[in-house]
Length: 350
Image (tube, rainbow, N blue to C red):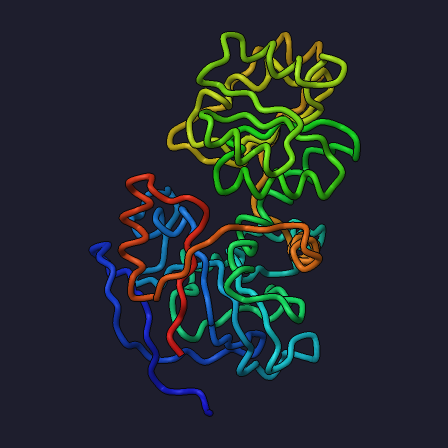
């Protein structure tokens, strides 16, 4: 079958309304590919994009989505054999970058001043056919289910990158704050696959059961702990605290607490983005204990290759529910109400 002229898409209009309608199918530029999207994960960032929450200019009208898995159906004249028609690929948050600046040449493509962001500055994956830069699509290994792998294209790569940024080595301990959430559950699995010892921090018995199921060596319930710092440090084999802290929490307080229990010379990695939150740590303790505090954004192209390889080898699993693309507004409602366990994946009509 040929490529149609029209397609179905969820379009964010200038008044922030979401309209499910038919639009023209885009054509790939010289360095781009056209991907027939089969499934797309739904990330909280997509809700921010719809609402215009962030201090970042977005394209309007806009097609959201940045966890798209599909098949290449056309490519531009400058695209070589690195990507071919018929191959399964993923379209991620980082849709494209200049590839020539200092950041791109050092493998920090997400920091490129001219980065193009799927579902924010360029149209994303909540449509049947999506355009992306050929250099930035991720090849999906053969035999990997496209619906199940979709959330790995953002959530999985993001937490894997954060763990790499922490510098923690096999056998060392990492505290994951927000361990029972969507990002946290994936972070625990990647940490374990990387040979790290996991201390899970979250609240409630349901989260505890999940974390224990995922192989956490210890669970610290912040809703029950009378001395969080002591309990986290006591959960490490020598009582000195974790070598690294991965913050995927959705509130500010955990970002303030981490400096108190991380081990000397340890690293705190901020990944979560609670609204209007600030990192805070005592200067004296940070200096004399040589604590490293850093942020971690989405992964680069190689991080994507590695994160997908972990998944393809069966080391990472992400629970998900599938709904049709037309039901995307309902997913956003559940997201706003905090009623989503795991991830939602929308199936794109074919």
